[in-house]
Length: 413
Image (cartoon, rainbow, N blue to C red; front, side):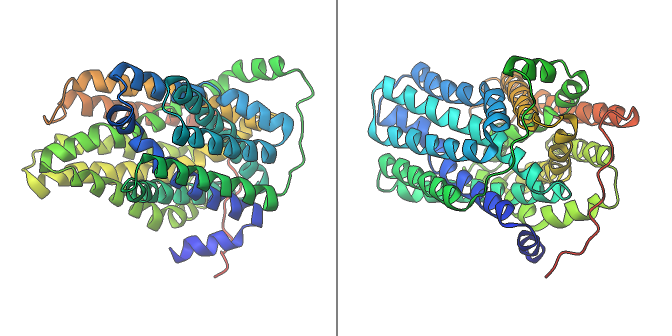
């Protein structure tokens, strides 16, 4: 953690603000969203179909609008789009606190989803411009603070739920309101380099960039496998131990590994390994981790070890690959299109992740306390290993762009 804080201090104020901002974003998000389905079922008394509609609308509003959010960052400036996204999520979560009718819940879902579609690509485009020579390190820090927020958010939310869901919703809205004000006061604007053509031509240029589309498809498995921290891994952990508390152990282990190792690992790899090689190793580690639960194991804590090992390898793989993936994306885009390229990357990755998770869910069937079938583990492993092979092929064909300058400078203590 000492290296992490030293690295934070070595960056200019805008980068420091945005990585801390991501801590707040994930705290606010995970204070509310993990408990939303239960609230809709138990307190609002919605049917399973309507709960699925509300949650699906939120997801579609975010995933389906990433391209628009990225283009808005390119044309209007990332700073304004980041602030607007946080403000919209403030309103969306406040509506969750105020409204129990289906139209109000759908409106809250649309607003909170659109908010994510705005600030997610905008934040990454801003970071890419603010730290052009240290992008991998900046995105590594981003991952550290995001992971910490994802762990702390549910803890804060569960404490507020002792009052009621409305308290959790207002608390989450307050977090985003504070982030909105902080960014409006402190985050400086960046020069806006527009593409010089109509929006439709921007999208056409991005959507017809075969080199980037192949890169995006090859790496979309990264998000599909990350999603399994919420599906196959917790199901197997609870089956092995018979206790829901085992699920918390997965999240704690994953977060602790990320907090302790992300920044030193990224710095070490930056000067010693080609980007394509590092991403290949990371994706192979993610995929290989899903083979561990196929090993014979007992029950109780012993039975948890293979699942815990899979969660740790998943975290390590993400730590290796993700900063370099995000570092490479701006290299595909010409001036004025960085946000658009980030938006397309997240749009495609979200669609692939949803399809992959659906496929894994079908293979699992109705688990309901049973062990996750071998087919689900093999499918996840195949996704990761196929992605590693695809990245390796792109690397050998020089399709990942030039290697950035290694980060060799010492970080001040």
